[in-house]
Length: 188
Image 1 (tube, one colour):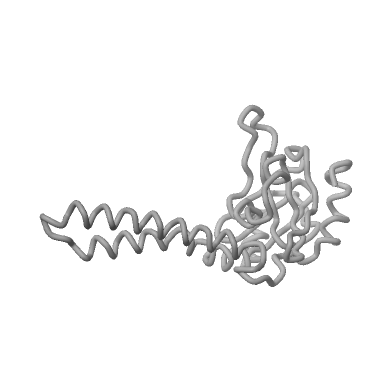
Image 2: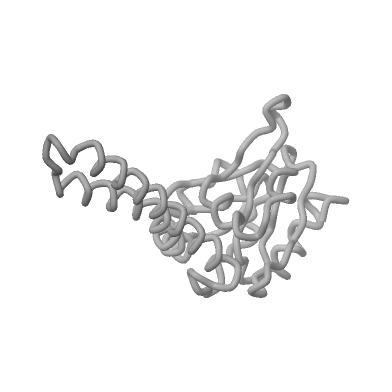
């Protein structure tokens, strides 16, 4: 990933800091409850679909493969949480003289001049994340990983303003804070 990060640097852009997500449990105190809730809701919806299907298809013949398909689809959503954890563990974070970058499966970045609001926040599991933009700052901690994976989202009314960008569970938050104090003055 470090090599891929270096490939993303624009001509003349200087790398000031690199880091990654610190080790964390995929289903820690922050993410276990939402994961469980997604599973329960998904399977309740699947159960309702299956009951409806069985009651309607009783006369024409029930296809067991269709029931298995519904159950498989209900499992996909919650299992994304597990895949997201693996993606973030391999990601590399960077601060350059121009922007913040997260390199993982995809490359996501935001220029400093697009960030009007930013803060370091600690979640219930003790992980410190950098949140940029008003949507990221108001998001619950269970959404911070997702925001990191999605990347930079713009304000709908002002496309030059960052609405959400995050670096989840930064391993060297103090080092990043030092760099960003100069790059985003008055924000952090």
